[in-house]
Amino acid sequence: MLRKLLLPILLMTISLNITAKDFSFSLGTLNLGEKRLSLNLDKVKVVKEKSNPDVSIRVVNNSTEWAREAGNILSPKALVSISVRSPKVVSLKYESQVLLSQGEGVKNTVVYIDLYSPKPIEIFEDERLIEIVNFEFNAKSQNNEGVVIDYSCAPYGLEVEGIENEYATLGCVRERLGKIGSERNRIIVTAKVNKLRSPLNTSAPYFAILMNERPVITTLQNPNEKLQVKLKAKFPKRANRVHLALGLGPYTFNTHDGDKAEKEEAAPALMIYSKLDISDVSSFRFFEALVYKKSLFSNTGLYFAYELATAFDNKVQIVPLLGAQILTYKFDSRSSTTNKIIYPQGFEASFNHALGIKNFNFTYGMFLSTQTNETYKNLWLRWGKKYFWEINYIKWARERKNAEMLGISIGIPIGKLF
Image 1 (cartoon, rainbow, N blue to C red):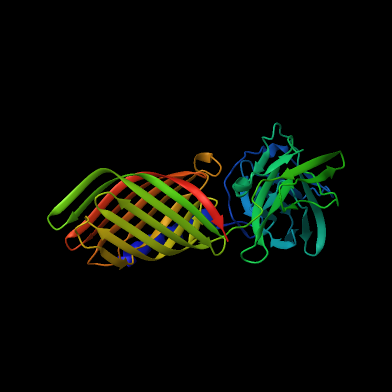
Image 2: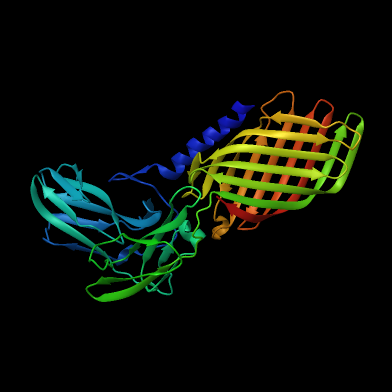
């Protein structure tokens, strides 16, 4: 059973990684992100410093790709086609990388450039520099329409002021500072604003470190304008590792013990959820599912969880759950209590920021039994933001005893520790 469970997860992981990440281009590999904004490439100005008639440059229409870079920033890249009439060896230098051109009498190359922070392309014939090509994305937006704030900033409510009429992109990374048990959060914001440079006249990206809710205020400039820019976010100072939540709701509850049976249309159910973060991609998870009326069913689990795969610009995450459970079952007050240690294994598949709503998440999860002499299924569908709803189905059977329950509960965060 474990093999049957892990095989589809492994196949899904391979396929998701291939379709979402591995796209090779002229200069290295681009980790493609979600296309959040359409850009008019007719606004890209091409300037040849040496006006070499043998060098032709063309920005390819509809070629914009949004690449995810360090700092969770989405950068727009446009494809540039370069043709050089020359019988000699033609090579290009772009961002400290050298690219050899293809062809005989006419040499052709395509290169992706960063629209918001384009670097010049140097073109060489043998060892002689024959052209330097510069690019400018001459476009303005309005009412913040051109400002892309990545979903990585959504948990911290990042706000930016002063660039409402510019094209810009921002991303966030959360870091923990201090000793375990007293750690504090800090948010590192990475930003690019089209055609604007830092106060030290350096090109994008720029970085801001937020330690609390006080804003970062700076100036961005070019030869024609100077803008005052303010960044601020809202996040807890403490970086707690333990998170607790409580779930309450009515469940249908059907039980059997030999020839005896009980059927409850609405039995009270209590759920306890706890997570201990080990790192940003791994944790220990504890849960308790208790349903009780005339019969009692308690399902307690401890699992190690880790991020196995992501897809669709990190919106979809696959998380295996590896561990064990303690199961307690009592049919009625006159029956004996069954206590069992069982080893069902499972996974969760989460869709974060679903439907384009920041911090709104869908999660589907399941446990299946790895033991042939015992039936166990546990499936759940969870959705929401800070508070969440969960539909849960559990079925257990061994010998002549069994319990089956289905219900909906509301999840409420109740605290953070450590």
